[in-house]
Image (tube, rainbow, N blue to C red):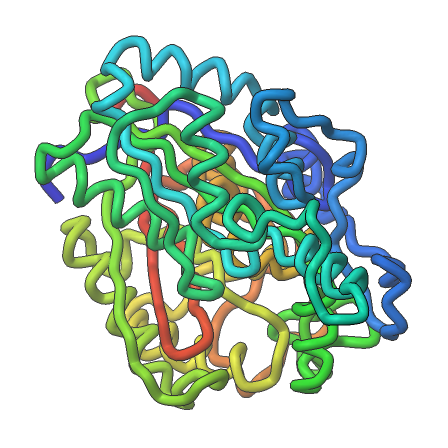
Length: 399
């Protein structure tokens, strides 16, 4: 990759807490933020990753039309770790028309639509307060953040299920390399709603216990919510973390099931390695998509084992046992996990995994480990319909 981009600021707000501090503490100790499902009185025997304090967030009065859970979560995340201030400083440096905004989400503000449908009048009309354009619409997330920050550059939402916010990093890199922007704010926000909770339950994919990625007795996923953001600017000698490569593919094998041999997953990882100019043996840690569903974990493990056949001892883990599967936000959250692993020299554990499935041929990290020599991290995000994305983050010259 020519002219790599540096992550000059980043943040993640998850069920573990607001900002990177509680996430880092969990990565070091193996703590989980999952809890039994009690969201919106959902009658489901499953566990979820709910972010604390979302309902207490108030949007600025000028942006009141955007009010919904997803945008409250977005604002909570933007204000963590001084990220909003860092973004505004970058906008001042580069100009409001030279900073791109690319965000990922899958359900956006659909919780508002759910509430509106429950309030339909006898003729079926939705209540006057419901504004689809500013809430439920997937483009509303980017519009909200753009208006909040006063941006005038390229701005769009990517909604490709669980690969959405990982693909935002790739899209931002293309924009900068094409000369359409000098910097980019990327990330993802997905909030809890009944559609995803009952939808995944209807597919028999939710676990009645905290999810157990890559476990021999895994029973499904735990749905979570999160907001994660990164500021990407051209790297220099002071850069600590850089986006060194990315790969994307579409295997189109099935509407909701991965290709059993992980062909699309393998293609995305191979492209990321090639773009970064790295070999499989250069990767020191791989953050698995690892949703804890039987088919996903086996498919991904098969793909990883094939692509990294020359590096069979590669440490791998899924961090979804800590905060749940955050859907469209997962790629950005796990990019932040990768950045923290590089910054602090650690290998995150696959929290929830008790007995690694011998049919999944990867080296699963079962307890947090120190890794001071860690230099390159690969993170996978794979979505419904075969939409795959892999990111490689590396320690920069300033690390």
